[in-house]
Image (cartoon, rainbow, N blue to C red; front, side, top):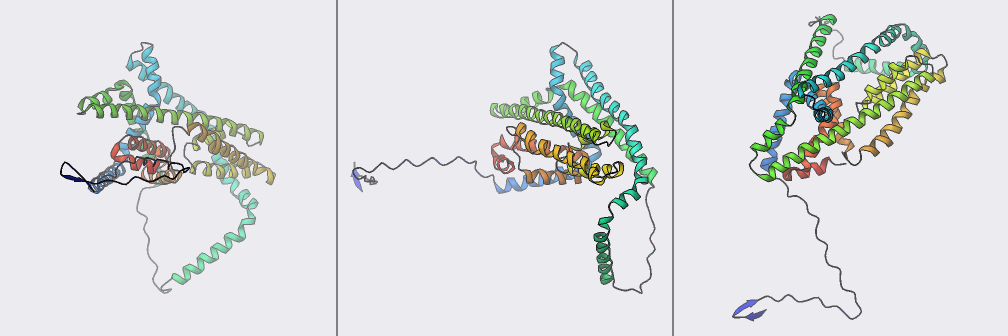
Length: 381
C-alpha cells in the first residue's frame, strides 16, 4: 500500500524476470461468446414454438401448400428478376414461369405413367418368382414367426375367453383414393395461387417489414437475413436438383446397361428419391433390388442394378454434393436425421423434402440474431 494525496492506493507487484529468461507471452483474449439468453425468454420461446408446431400440424392442409409456395418462390425469384430486367411485366412473367414449371412437371408425369403402370401390373405376377429366388430367407423368417407365436402364447391371459367381434368402421379404398386426390388437387391449386402472387409481390413483404422496424440496426439485420435465406436456400435447391439430375441420368444408364428396361422411369425414380435425404436412397436400393429380381434371370446379375445405384449415391451423397455445399451448409447430420423424421411425421413426404431447407433457415436466423446465436452454434455441423 502507498499513500498519495492522503488516499491509500494499492500497488500491484510486477513479475520479476531473471536475466536471460524470455518474457512470458501475453494472455490471449478469451474467445467472445454471446451471453446466454434469459431462462424466462427461453421458456416463452419454447411455448411459442410448440404452439406454432401444433398449429402447423392441425392446419397442415393449409400451411403446407403455403410453405411449398414460399420455397418455390425462393428458387424461381432469380428467374423473375431476369425477366424483369428484360422489361417483361411481372404478372406475365409470373404466369410464364408457373406454366413452364408445372407444365413440364405434368408432361414428365404423363410420360412416365405408362411404364409405371406396366411395372405395377408385373408385380402381382412376379411375387412367386420373388419367393423362389428368396427361398434362402425362408428359414430365418420361419424362425421369427415361431418365436412370435410363442410370445403370443405366453402373453395370452385366458385361452377360454370368448372371441371378440371386430367391426370395420371407415371408408373404403375407393373413397380414400377420391379424398386423397381431392386433397392433392386442392393443395396444388393453393400452391399455384400463392406462388403466383408471391412472384408478383416480389420484395413487398421485405420492404414493409423494414418500414415497421424501429431501429436502423434491426432494418439492416432483416435485410441481411432475408438475402442470406434467399441466396442459400436457392443455391441449395438448385445444387441438389442438378446433382439429382446427374444421379437420375447415371441410374437410367445403369438400368439400360443391366437390361432392366425403361431407363427413363428408373432415372426419374432415382431423381425423385434423392430429394429425401437418407431414407430416399434406402428406399431406392430396395426398389432396384426388387426390380432386378423380377426382370433379370441370372441371380448374381439381378443384384447389379441395386449395387450400381448404391455406388452412384455414395459418390454423389458422400463426396460431390457435400463438397459443393460445404461453404453454405454446415448442419449437424444428427439434427438433419431428427428433422427428417419429425417433419415426415408432421407432413409426410413433402415434410421430409422440406426438412433440410427449413433447418437451414432456422440456422441462418439464429446466426444473425444475438439472442439466438447459441442455438445457431448448436445446429452447426
